[in-house]
Image 1 (tube, helix red, strand yellow):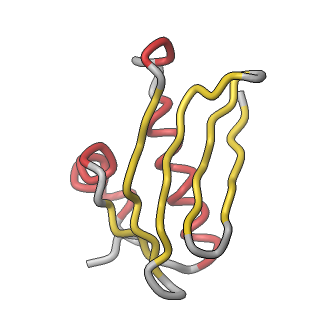
Image 2 (cartoon, one colour):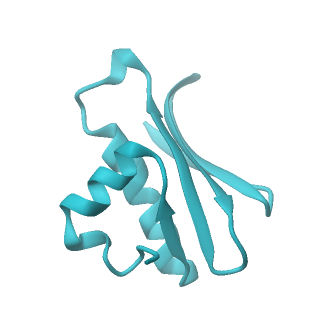
Length: 94
């Protein structure tokens, strides 16, 4: 499996591909130059229970660290991860 990053300057996504199939995706919307709003995390049912949602959120966190931007976690899954682990504190927008 591989994660592909797509970004058009207004919105973006990290898409988890399993060959030709899409296993999951996390999407975001830019909110200025230094913040993204993470608005949706989705993993296909047949890929559930493998930690792939967390892997996708971690990809967004890595992107945020590289670009020195902050994340506003608006989807319930990402929000729960951010609240459960301090490992996202450096990228979480307050």
